[in-house]
View 1 (cartoon, each protein chain N blue to C red):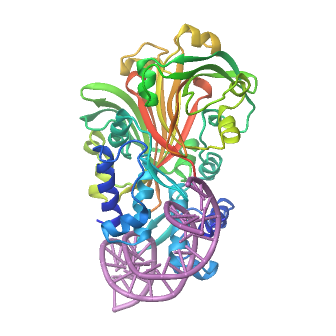
View 2 (cartoon, each protein chain N blue to C red):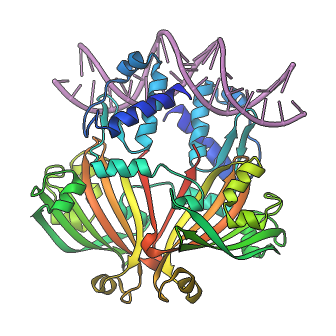
Length: 237
Length: 237
DNA sequence: AAGTGGTCTAGACCACATT
DNA sequence: ATGTGGTCTAGACCACTTC
């Protein structure tokens, strides 16, 4: 593990455990250099991680401080350390799938555009109900080019597609671009998710990229409103 | 402007303008060092900005590449360079407010907890309908400690509270922690937003921090479903 | 004036990926 | 074997804040 990551871990634990409390000034960068026997750049990199996680703030010419965080907020921040993968929206639960459709189709124009491939190229067309701890929580519509993700089988679709990619293709998911919206459930969606017609649903539209930069997935998922929640931290600059 | 930011800007423009296209390998870090006459660390910092923005990926031992981005996606990424401030959810539009309530109250237990202050401390209790381009799009409930944000007047509440903080208090908003949910509109909300009762609404719960690390705001806002949209990029590691 | 974090360098060495 | 990006250093200088 890199030194800066180790230092970030140590300080994160100290903040979480209350060793440094809300609004408290942290030791100076210079002092951390001595404590950890590293250079200034390394300390800075460690502290910048904690800034991006929302735990601390830095003021040039003044010092570094723990944010005015409530205990509840600290717990929340630590729990929601960001995952990728639609199933990872529901962490620490058993996720399985009821497969409604799993075919290879010629991509229609709009799907081809979202996947950055030619219209008519073959794509997996995967339609699943995602079941978390026995309860249907989301309907997920996924398209992937067969050229980018070859060899996908029904058993993979019933479980985790992401696992298939990481294990069998020895590739990895690098990033996901997401768009969140809200609308009313259609009759079909309401039926599958155990809702009334017109009840609210959360929509996640996602484009996924591999660590090669390749666009491998376009999906949108419809989420039951009472179990849908997304958290994030925005930071200026 | 720091060198790394300048370099990031130059490369971002080149990607947007199509000078570097999808999946194309970028020049090596070493080459950028010569082109811009800077050291390797500076180039790396510039490229890391573009990684976090979702434009490129880097592979150790192999090179740096433009992501397999559609033109639509590139435009979207550039438009949604992140803002802070609830009104900034609606960029480039005229935002004003109908103030339903603006009082100073003793904080009830739950609000005090969210603001990390003692129960019974005085807080602004601000209840506004946010009107974008003449249309009511959101209801916003904001609580702020009068100790942290002194001197707030009705005219500020009718306009932008954030502007008041930045201009009059010479302070700045450093970060915001957000939680997104979905539910049905109440009768009151439906009426104010021009919806049917039970129609979907998006909920944004937000805790805001100043650049001093102080928690200055707890708010939650109820958004009309057909104009509610949030975009973000998730990156592994 | 003194002291903070921010930027930048020139170079060393390392971990990883391809050929 | 070669070459990529990743980490790290020791030190310089800068921008900013407070007192």
